[in-house]
Length: 484
Image 1: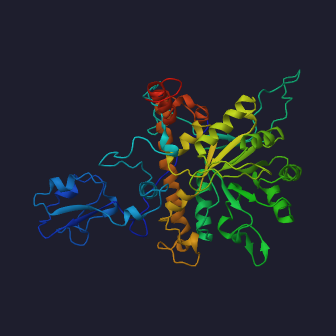
Image 2: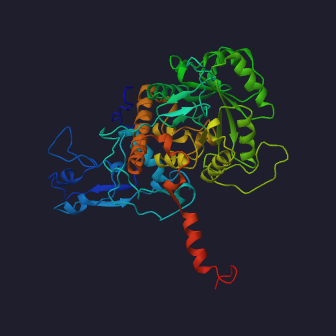
């Protein structure tokens, strides 16, 4: 029996104090009784290491707003207020809550619990309009986190045979296509900004430890050394876990050498992409080829064409906020309104199911995957696995100030270029460990023993748009659709 997959997380403190949602102040009425440290479960309060008779300054960023310390203080020496800097983090999609949650998971490897409970909206846009349905728990004792029963998060990458044929002697006659087994349905995508050699090394180390893969842009500067193109210094020793991404459709000697050495390669979609796919297969018949396709107009037809042409993996990507592109790369495609990655994934998956070719291709989905729950929801919508980018930067303390995005010369408030690769790798490992545990929680509550069975299981989810339509259309749609 194969060894059970597990991720070892280790407490990895931040280099810079994170921005917390609350600020705690202790005034002169404090008698250093330590009651606050006793009742706080988030380690906000502790005694001074140099002099245990005194209380140390509160660690603000750990506070969850449970008010236990405020209520239990015998001298009313503690006060709490909301931070002025916290609401400034991120933007309307990458909210302060998302960023701080990823920070916490990267530091601890644990699933965060809010002392004040969830006080957010009942529903929202994007993934927030979709809930996983836990109402039909098959076996509530099935718990992959505590090891009582193992739940597999392994996914297969590559083409799947509908059936295997045997000859008269019992030998396999079918041509078995190459496949990869990845122990988690998450790979690392190229970063939109913040690209430094030490960051790449941290990601490569983490991908190697986790057994997953990291997509690397071959045209990136870190692939060059004194005029000669080669693997970046930080990724040497981890090349078996790298997926070269080639944006041009003419292979040079360096790309040809990469294809011969790698398990998987990714090409950017273009009109002549199939010719370079066939060329790659000639160079290495065992390599798995992925084609990177933007979500946009006519994406279902484009995926159909690539699948029938024999492409094994299609990487569908949206923009950084999970929004589809207004116009695809297909010539003469008409303009259309933007949609969200969730809906487009549903459409592509269902289109392939209708054609009875869904198992002939692996779908990787990326763009706007911000939290662990988004991985499960993307798979429910039809993805086989996801590719993430910004959460990896958050694991390295990125505050999403967008300075390096707008102007690479502007100083980074957390000095990403100075990240220690070993420290960064452990922070990424902690993040993925927490995300996997949350995925196990979802699978366990649904009674599923492997994540592969979650793909396309829309019956395991509730969609707000459908509930709203089914409920209110019946109530208010009167007289042929008129609303009174």
